[in-house]
Image 1 (cartoon, one colour):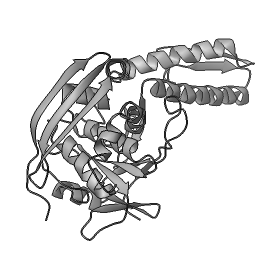
Image 2 (spheres, rainbow, N blue to C red):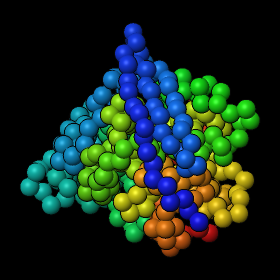
Image 3 (cartoon, rainbow, N blue to C red):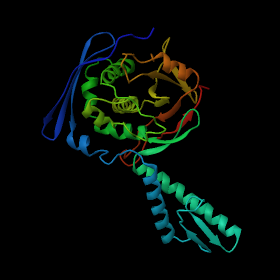
Image 4 (cartoon, rainbow, N blue to C red):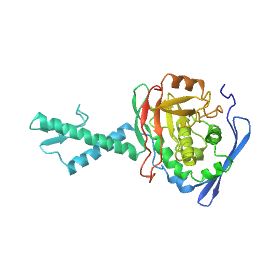
Length: 322
């Protein structure tokens, strides 16, 4: 049966030390034992990383993308047509005139291709990406895998401190320790991924600084820490309605809750709290959603070189276990 214990953060403080801040934590784990963790993080990483990350606004995005498209078309005009960016147009603000329908249709296709590329670039520049919910709703949400990948580099000072606590580098024991740490961090309510467009999301180091985070923020922090601890382990970020889980590829034990993606079994974890659940145990509502296929899974596999400029091999899967 899942643990009934509630997470409890016994102490939290942060102390300025030169170019760093020292973070100090104490909490009770799911076995009722007191755990602690102290580490240093660079001020530059805390305050400069993702400084410009903000709530996604569709109108602002549309304005920026259309401006970029107009500049692109002025620099590389399409021959044989005239393109008018008319705000009153019914054709996505663009009217194309030309000598014949074939030329016009080809121009529309080219403009659509350019606009898609510029839209993707705008989202990437602002740390967002396109997201499809399990019930096929298209949305824009923070690129949680990318946040976790970059933050894993900033969190490298935590690695030796955590691993020193374990005589045997057991994935399950290390993960349970990290889960207890993050579950004990105070919870902030998750805003809708479909309508809130990033409102309430705290990147990993901002979550640590503010000592609170919603479930998307906590899952992202968990993934970042585990990526730093175990660089080659395969993980997935699992999004269900108003909640998020983490999946880890590792040997499955009896009673572990899992999902299977492309033949790979991932053991599920609940980083959010407030219940203290070890790896393999998830809340009943989460179990029901996953069992019914009401989830979207984003692969969070390998690290790549120059991680601050090149992101993880992230792909998305929607639906039930095969």
